[in-house]
Amino acid sequence: MSPHESPLIVVGAGPAGIGAAVEARRSGADVVLVDSSGVAGGTIRIAHEVRNVPFLPDRSPGTLVADGLCAFAHRWQLDAIAHECLSVERDGDGVVVVTRDGARINGCGVVLATGARPLVPIVAGLPGVLEPPWACSAPDACRAGSIASAAIVGASDVAFDQARWLRARGVVVTVLCRAAVPRAPAWLVADACAEGVALRTATSVACGSVARSRWVLRLDSGGAGDELEVDRIVAAAGRAPAWRGSIAIEPQAMNRVRVAGDAVGRRARHVVAALGDGCTAAAELLAARERES
Ligand SMILES: Cc1cc2nc3c(=O)[nH]c(=O)nc-3n(C[C@H](O)[C@H](O)[C@H](O)COP(=O)(O)OP(=O)(O)OC[C@H]3O[C@@H](n4cnc5c(N)ncnc54)[C@H](O)[C@@H]3O)c2cc1C
Image (tube, rainbow, N blue to C red; front, side, top):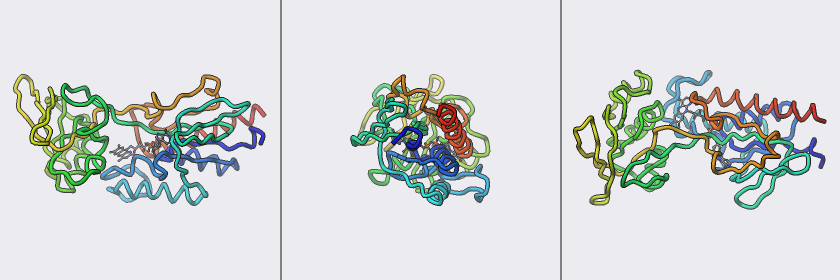
């Protein structure tokens, strides 16, 4: 197969990956869409409530948005194939994507749309990696069974969204915000507090330890110290592009790769921005290949 006939490979089937894959498909290109989860829709699936996606009812659950994206991809005969991408290498005039299960997928280029993952705050006594008691999301905190209490470290919109997700399932939730005022919009903070989410501002976690199989967080609120006992802790103090440090890109393959959506590492992380970004990435990559041929 000549490189010009080989497919565009899209890694990640969230909004950015689906935007890229559909754009490529509608322009007539062959596409391979892979996602480590094997399911399309992306991170928005875990959101408690979404209000900024046009054409969907206000306060839609994230699952509805993700299922809508899945259906959109399906209408273009695009289903995510379960593969975790480990590296992108140059192969002749094209690229090859190497996956954890040993597959080698050849293509004319790659759109990397792998989203962002939460950063783990450094706290004495707690692991510095995403393992219990840390959870990467509210659903992740409940994966091993229901929990009674949780702390959310961070005070962005993601922090309050996930606090509401847990609260709606009867969990006692405390949001720990280092600043005097949370970064999340005031309406979201107000909704969360009205639903019973506790908010501690100007409070940081000094250290953590285990007691009676629960986690005890020593809190520091401007000199005054007290403790909070919880089952799990959700890391919501910032996110970083998921591909950095986990996908190796050969320097010779760089000009065949476009990064799209949350994987770019911008502050504004939104479904519609990611969708548009994916479309643009695919269109640019295919146009560049067209010019070369
Ligand atoms: C709790 C929460 C609430 C949110 N609420 C809103 C909201 O109300 N409105 C809004 O607009 N946005 C919201 N967002 C942001 C929105 O979810 C993201 O901006 C959007 O999902 C980004 O799309 P993406 O395609 O770039 O990445 P993602 O949706 O994260 O998709 C990335 C995909 O890549 C896959 N992947 C990762 N690594 C690999 C690999 N190595 N190989 C193969 N596949 C891989 C993942 O499995 C995932 O499916 C929220 C986010 C969170 C976390």
